[in-house]
Image (cartoon, rainbow, N blue to C red; front, side):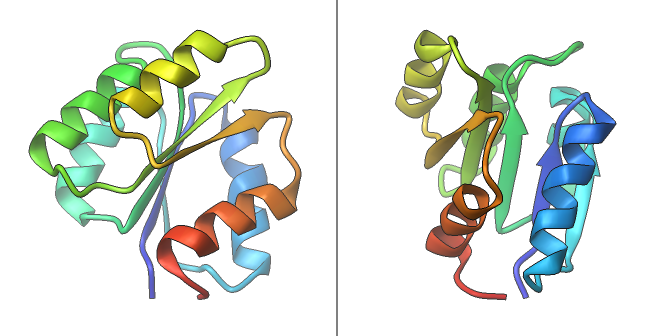
Length: 121
């Protein structure tokens, strides 16, 4: 079963993604509240996929993406961004993000991305 780490400073966004994934059978889900927390949890649990917001306090998603990829060049990281953050999305992909999801997102888009990276639950 794939381990998935959800990283967003907004508890509501983590819950929406968590609910979407758990309804589809992905149940090995973990949460982090910012980039620093994500870096610690990544090292601790070695997830198969990270879904991470870009704009967060303490350490933003781009910094966390680069730090995680420095530790694990094969890390599967999908970035989430609000509409209008195209330059950040481009930077994320150049820094090794596997994909990006624009907020507000549809559940089908999240599931399609997760399935394409880690397979079915």
